[in-house]
Every structure is written in structure tokens, then in C-alpha cells.
Image (cartoon, rainbow, N blue to C red; front, side, top):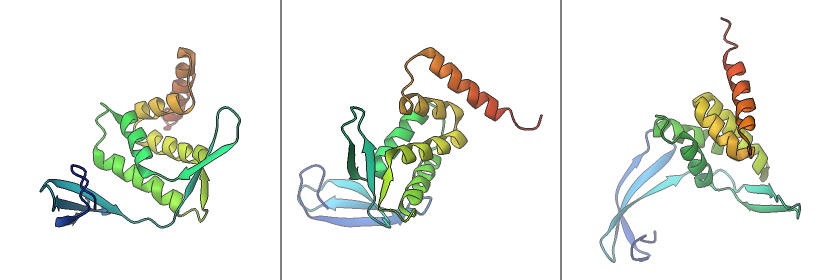
Length: 161
């Protein structure tokens, strides 16, 4: 594993343990070159999945490898200052990754992944859900927020009261 500090290719594993949700192995490493310590995570990857993105300019579809960290960043940003525990965010992201990898398909649309994230956030935190939707659905006016928030409130009030 390459050292993030000095780029040396050799490091020793000092400690390994599973993460709290048992979806990854956390490894503490020490660089043999500079002696710096750093942490890596090892996760199971069931298959290589390609994400198909449609370009906004209509020039066609781009393809890129599925990247879990992009979902992690988006979900963390939507949940920022919401008091959502990191463990719950990790569980949501792991669940989405499992869904993507177990579809049996080698390609998945970015739209489908976005819908998975929205569904997960809807169940996790309503404000994070609206935050993510505002970017994902490209809200441009306050009215867009209002209309979307009213659908969230309507869906949430159907609890049989």
C-alpha cells in the first residue's frame, strides 16, 4: 500500500479489525520509508460495475467505474449538521453498494443510483432527503423546494392519525 505522506510502496500492517457494521476491515499501517501511520479500509467487491451517466449537453452517455466514495460524500454532505450517526450513513452507503453490485448487471445508470440514495435518505432523515433532492433534481427556485417539501410532509402525515 502506497504511503499517503511519502509515496513509498512498502508499509506494514500493525492492526486489523472489522468495522462496526462488519462490512469492511480497518487496517492501521506504518510506512517503512518515513514511519508515518495511516488507516486503510478493505471492502468486498462482488463485481466491477460501470455507471452510465447521461451528459447534460446531449452528447451521449459517459461511462465510469462505480465509486462508493462519491455516494459517501453526497450522503455525508446531505446529512451534515443533522445529527445522523456516521454508522447509519455507512450502513446506508453499504446497502446501496450491495444493491448496485447484486443487480446482476455490469452497468447501472447514475439515475438509478440517485433514486437509491434518495430512497435511503427519505427513510434516514427528511431534511437530508430534501437537501439531496435539491441538488439531484436541480431545484432552481424557492418554489421547487416548497413543492417538494409539501410532498414529503404529505407522505409523512399518512400515519393513520
